[in-house]
Image 1 (cartoon, rainbow, N blue to C red):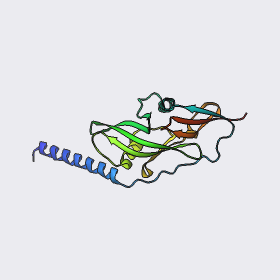
Image 2: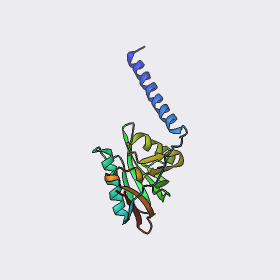
Image 3: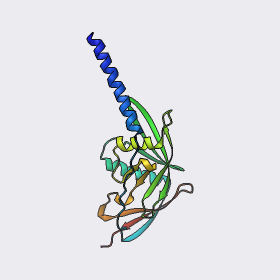
Image 4: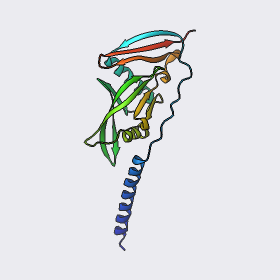
Length: 190
């Protein structure tokens, strides 16, 4: 047999194997992520801050950029009537723009839970669970952003964002429709 025929068949086998592996990886069930709750809420003097959507968006993107340490920003957070996470996935040398739309909710401990409402990935429709799994596994996110594909949500653990002098942040209210965003800054007592 000709060496070119052998090389061709090996290439076909590698391509089919790669596609099969990718499909298997995407379609396997996703396990839930165990999210550790902080045992005690931060104590101290509380400063209440009211922010606009633009302020919140700028602060969030600044902390994401700071956390990834000078690398290109893999994720852009936009705040409108919903929170939108935009990114780009590369598959077989093709770039696919991805927009994930989330409804924000404030947890009782002051963290923000983003429940996915819809997804746009180029011209294709994909399951939100698959997109969140791709996001979790392919984009290097800060430790305080926990992606839970099984629940179709992202948890932003505000209390885990590293800040100076032990200062902690917690959300009090997120009403994007009326542009009301209230955060509490907890300054520890000396």
